[in-house]
Structures are given as C-alpha cells and as structure tokens.
Amino acid sequence: MLETGGCMLRATIVDVLQMSRQACSLRPLREPAGLQPTASGLQPLMERLYFDYNATTPLLPEVLEAMLPYLKEDYGNPSSIHHFGQQARAAVEQARAQVAALINCRPNEIVFTGGGTEADNLAVFGAVRAAAAKGPGPKHVVTSAIEHHAVWNACQALEKEGAEVTYLPVGSRGIVSIEDVRRALGPETALVTVMYANNEIGAIQPVAEIAQLARAHGALAHTDAVQAVGKIPVDVKALGVDLLALSGHKICAPKGVGALFVRRNTLLQPLSYGGHHERDRRAGTENVAGIVGLGRAAELARQSLAAESRRLAALRDRLERGVLEKVPDTAVNGDPLHRVPNTCNLRFDCVEGEALVIALDLKGVACATGAACSSGAIEPSHVLTAIGLRPEQARASLRFSLGRQTTEEQVDRLLQILPGVVAHLRELSPVYKR
Ligand code: PLP
Image (cartoon, rainbow, N blue to C red):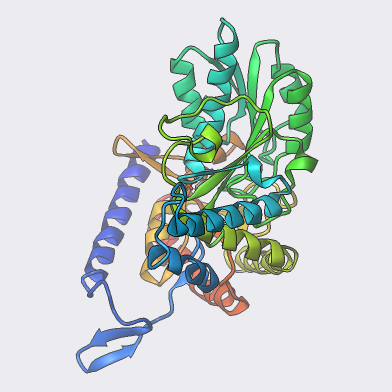
C-alpha cells in the first residue's frame, strides 16, 4: 500500500520535474557557447557541470585535430592501392599501433569495430560459435550478474540459440569470487566473460585470476574493459585474456568506434561477412577518421594515465566525502577500494533517483542513475540489486563519474547544489523522516 502510494508520488514528482525541464528547454537549442539570450541581449550562461563521463566523454581537441584531415582532404579508402588509399592505410595502421601500445599487445592483434558493444558481441558470439563449429553439444558460457547489456544481452541471445549460461553472483562489494568461477567451469565451457570494471559502481574484477582458470579449463577468456581502459593500467599480457573490448567514446575519442583485442591464433567466427578487412575478423570499409581519433586518444591516455588517475581519485574522494558530510542518510554503493578512480555511486535514502537526476539537470548538473525504463516502469539497476540493494534503495542511487575536464571547483559547486536539491525532494517524500 505504502509502496503503491510512494510510486504514485514518485511518478508525480518526475512528471512535474519533466514539465519544468521541457519549459526550460524552450530556449533555443544552439546558443553561442557561454551565452544565453535574454530580453536585454546575451548574458553569461551558467556553466553546466558534467559528471557523466562513464556515459560518454567529450572529444579532446588533439583528437579532433588528428581526425580532421581524414574527414576532408585525406578521404582515401585504405583498401585502395593508389596514393589516397595508402595514406588512409598508413593512418589506420598508426592508430592500430597506438591502441596496441595502450594495452600491451601486438598491433595485428587489434580489430577495429563500430564501438564497445560490437567488440563485446564479436567476442561473445564469435568465440561460442567458433567452439560450436568444432563439435556438437551445447556450449557453456560463464559470465557475471553485473555485466553491461552489451555482454548480458549477447549471453541472453546465446541462450536462445541453445547455449547454457551461468551468471555468477557478486557480493555486496560487487566483485566476482574466484571460487564461484572455479565451481562454474566445466568441460563444456567455451567462454568466460567477466567485465574488467563495472560501469555503474566502478568495481574492478579479478580478471587475471579468472582468465588463468578459464584457460586452464580450455575455455577462452574475454573481458569487457570499456570502463577500465584509460582509467587504470590495462595490460593484456599480464591479464592473460584472449579477448578484450574497448570503446572510443569512453576515452575522449568519437562514438561509434572501438576495438577488440584478439590474441594471435584465437578461433573466432566473424559477425559479418564481406571483404577481407581486419584480417577477416570484421568485414567493412574502415571508419578511418574514427580509428585515427581512437589511436590518438589511446596515445594521450597512455601518456597521462598515472597522473590523471591520481588526480581523479582525489577529486572523486573529495566529492564523496563532501556528500557524506553534507547530506544525511547517504551511503556509498559497492567497494570503496577496488574500483576505478573516476566513479562513485551514492545512495540518497527516500529519494527517487530519476527525480533527482532531473532536478539536478535543472540546476545545470549532469549525472546518471543505473535504472532502465522497461514497459513504462522504471526498473532498478541490475547491478545495484546484484550487490544486495533493495529495489527502492537501487532507485535512490546516482552515479557521478569524473573525467579529464573535471576540476576541484566543479566538485565544490556540485557540493553546494546537491544538498539543497536532495532536501527539497525529501520534503516531498511521504516516507522520509529525519
Ligand atoms: N561495456 C561497458 C562496460 C560500457 O559501459 C559500455 C557503454 O556504456 C559498453 C560496453 C558499450 O560501448 P559502446 O557505447 O561503445 O557501444
């Protein structure tokens, strides 16, 4: 009964906030940067605060600069043998070397894809279908309960094709247990795929130990490293994985480009058929400008990784300390130690996360919930429920993710805005009692 009442009230708050957001967005969409129109002319625009780097990152100027020639005068097709084609080919191969250097593999072990999702799909379907082609019988996949949908939904599709999938639980820290992996492995296991860093809580998984076990059982080891690359050192040799996915737009390169590391001699069925691009692993003319951007971003990430990850961890801790001090009835979700340096996931008891995201957006702050909209209802995040949160606690949680352009001043401004917004929403809550 209370839950029903709470839901109705939640819906009302979200509706009202949505309406205010729509009213605000009646302003022209494209204003000159830093200015907004008023009756008396252009006034300085409130600087928006972006705390959603795990969703996507802005292009770095150096990345854009590297890409521009390949969107303009250097438009050759890398498969052409003339001058234009060879220039494009050289640029793609330079980018391949840059990405390989970031994750410590050979350039010819990098397959460029159309993003992280495609890289994960190529790994999951490619590995299982190649194993199925070797012999009859259902193939078994081991994965975790907190995977991104790029892997999770690929596994669900494989189940429909007859494969068996084990979804390993994670404890309250959000970390898979090695013992559970050991128990799940069997003679039929074709693939173990456990993400390196979780996109919602940042939890870092024991990928090296998992890969060692998988390979000892004759299974391939894949990791979705989309949220790890550029944030922590990623070394495929030290990890011992056969397959590793990464994405451009999480490391300040453009959207729609990514890569899959495929260890030499790994059997993998392609997802698409066409020309002999990418050593027959991924057919289709290469996205040259995107690949060049990914290469340059990888190079920049490698150069600044250690310093940037220290800087981000300090900012993230400042944010987290500040919120816990200034906002009562809040908690950190997941393991505060074993996580990537840029991510924090916070629970604000008795607040509807969607409403908080919208209310913060109205104040110029961008952040995220892990909730998904399904059949008109807001489903709590599968990651947060997997670490043991009740649905209402999961719905009361927000992710703040930091990146290259985040400054101490921005964190402090967030800390000025957030307590008032949470307090206001709690005033409207029928269940919140100080
Ligand atoms: N894997 C993880 C962990 C992610 O966070 C994302 C994107 O959010 C993806 C995969 C998908 O990458 P892309 O957006 O490049 O398809």
